[in-house]
Length: 285
View: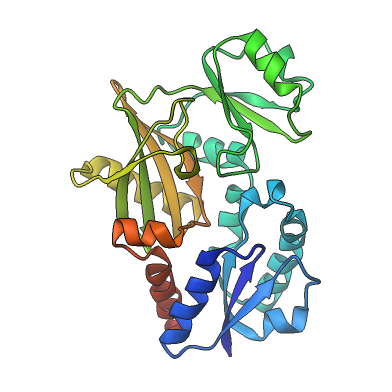
C-alpha cells in the first residue's frame, strides 16, 4: 500500500513532497489528474494527499478540478482517507462557501456583497467602495482587483473571464502587511508578514517582501487554528489583515504551496513538514 499524491501541475513543491515522503521509507505514488482517472490506481493507495489547487482553473488545468468529484466519490465509497478531506476541497473551490461558513460561526471575515458574473457585477447596488473582486474559485491573485468606484469596476471587468466573482469589503492593511500563516496538524508552523505591493495586493509574484512574524498574537494564531478545524483543513494556509478594529480572515487555502527559493529564504521546509504529517497519518491507519 502507498501514499498517493493527487496533482495537476508540475510544481516544484509536488516533487519535493514526494521526495520527502519517500525519504521516510514510505512508498509514494504521483497521480496526475490532468490524465484519465485510473480508479484502480487511486484505490491502491492507503492514503491520498490532495494537491489540486483552486487556481488550476486559470492555469489550463480545469480537467483536474473536474475530476475531483469522481475522486471523492470513489474514496468515500471505499472509506479511504484523504488529506485534506472532501469538505476542505469543497471550501477550497469556493470563497463564497468558506466565508459564509466562517461568518456563520462568528469568525471575523470581510463583509461579502455577493457573487456575480462579469457582465452583471455592475448591476448590484449593494457594493460599497473600495471593494475587492476576485474569482469565487481561484487563487494566486489571478484576476483579483481592488476597485474604488463603479466606473473603475465596470471598465476592468469587461475583459475578465466568464467565471463567478465574489465581491467583498476592502479591509485596508494599515500596518503595511498581510499575515500569512502555514498551519499543519492544528499548529502554526510558520507566521510571516508579507508586504503590500503598489497595487494594494499582497503576493510573492507581485514583489511582496517577507519577514518573520515573531510576535504573532495568540488570539490570531488560536483563531486561525479554530477556523481551519471548522473548514476541515488539516494542512493549509491562511491570510489575515489586521487593522484598527481587529483582524479579518481574507483567504483560506487547503492546498498550500512553496517554491525552492521560499524554502531557502525562510529556512523552513513546508513540504517536509507536510510530508511528516502525511507519514504520521499513514502510520496510524
